[in-house]
Image 1 (cartoon, rainbow, N blue to C red):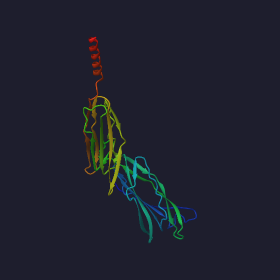
Image 2: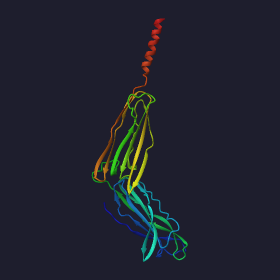
Image 3: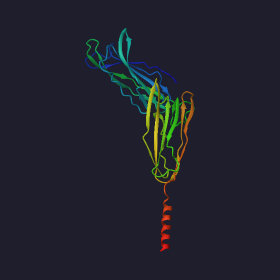
Image 4: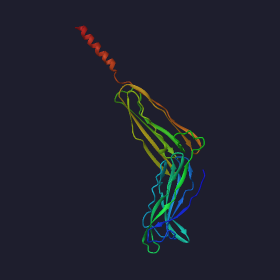
Length: 295
């Protein structure tokens, strides 16, 4: 992974009637992006720091970063105060940290934007508004050697599968039901990268219903983890049998740098408790025959 360090200073464009953009007291925005390549699903850190010569009576209006196939999120305590000595003077400011992750391989650009800052004029202490330009930022999502066959590409420190399923799976009767919940747990990657875990099966004698996925994401000391859970309910309507399919997820272990596979076995189900319509009809005809002979 190659690294670079961008530290770009932009002078603010301030409202008419104030000092020009070349004024040494104009606000400054610093952009720091130390690494610009990562594995899809992993995060890079982008920092925007706004500095003013006095103080800010209002919060900085940071830009909204929204790029297709890029996930850009704010971690806990993403915004914090800061200060810096510039030309012997102490400037105050605020830093915002973004986590940026390519969701698929390829090159991406966060377009140039502007942020709004309000600060106290050094001479009058009156509030002054300024628009600061932020240059575009480019990054790449790269697939490690040996993982080119993964589709979808999933990279994590750990990935596990578990399931909860009804106890009675065989010899069911109409009105009975089966519930299967599959949960995938990730460490070192967001669960949103995971594919669908349950496909609704077509099994004779059963009506199948799938709930919407439940996704929970957590962060602990910069490590993202979480779960994706999906639930399938099957209602018995008639006699029938079939298989709830096995599940296999292939993924790239970013610690061992090897491909891994996580699996769940298939599950057999059957319903045999419904009356057989043909047999009932035969029984009815036999009774009528016996009655006729008796007459």
